[in-house]
Length: 245
Length: 285
Picture 1 (tube, rainbow over the protein chains, first blue to last red):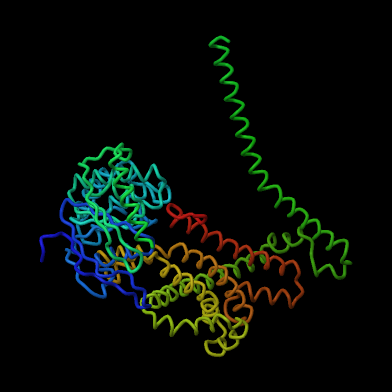
Picture 2 (cartoon, helix red, strand yellow; picture 1 turned 90 degrees about the vertical axis):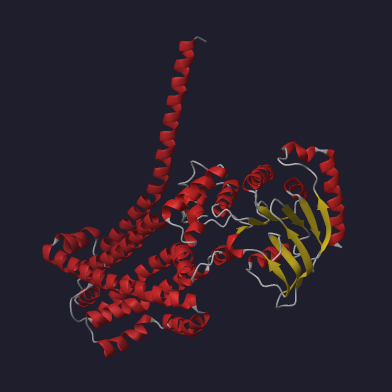
């Protein structure tokens, strides 16, 4: 067992139909790190998360992680439409047989953290896309996982909401101190959120470049207009173009 | 403009808005009520026209005018109690049949959802059973189970089972993959997954199936009764008797009642659906 919270050791993956998705991927992240993987569509970024969480077995290599306490934030909010926000946020604690009083306490805390207080009794159909994502985040927060996996979670919301959610997620990362592995298409999202950005090549996915992001947390929303930020984004963008071909 | 004028002005304009809102609501209601009322009146007119204008008095029994149907079918005490007695009997048969269909349908659909091989094994037979015209198996059922109430209930079950199975199964299988992943990640067992994910997810489809099946169960109850014609008289037996005896008014009354029963059952399940899942589910979403 290594000291790292999550590590991929020489992971390869081939689907039964022969699609080669991942090719000898190795990297690790530790507590306090927020690592984002950017890459072309279909390069196996999401497969990486499915392997990390054990939803999918790798064809080669190993993953070191404590799977009992893994937070997974999906591309969609995946709220159960027949449950209120409160009941949705309580779901994971419920699946882990945590008793009712504790469940309510955990859910209330999480709902407050994501700023959904007052919406506990609402059903998902009456929430906006951003609010659904917040509820989804709250649900994951209830178990205080030391590792968060984010599978392009803010792809479906509009630009402004996405920026807000980025800022809020970053505040949560600061506050809760989890290790984050984030998947996205958006370079600015990647740079704004992360301590490190990894660029993945087109299929079969390989890590082709790694960029340390030097900015201190908490990061100001205005950081996105900083020349340093733009420079780094530009470099990553160039590297990503290389990865496409 | 003085303050008072302005205030008066704003009150006046509020009034106008209120009036406008009321008229527009009245209009909406009128727009949904007037066309069916007009059409209904047209049908009634046509009915009277045929009864009095087309049919001569010796053949008027073929289509009695509406007021006579009401007079004979619903206002005459003994006819009324016969008709409503038959209606109640058929309603009970339909409800028993539907209950059994629901229980059996859920059971079969849940089994099919839990193991692919059960689905593969059972499904072709379900489709075959559904494809047999009900009239083709009714004699067989009479053969095996007699011509009384049991057979009527069995006809109801056979005719109403399929939509419940198909819709329930479809609903159970339609939960999104990511939701299943979520349950997998948190080590949910088969039973938890069924209870907390698949079953609630299936409810809208289940209700769609129930509404279809409820209507079919009513048809089954009447067809079975019409065919078997023994035991307690339901609407089916009455239909046959009135037709044989050329009792036009009673026949039409029985038809009206069967249709009313079907509509009531359909509406009841609509209300049940709204009560059960209306808070979180809307059909357009």
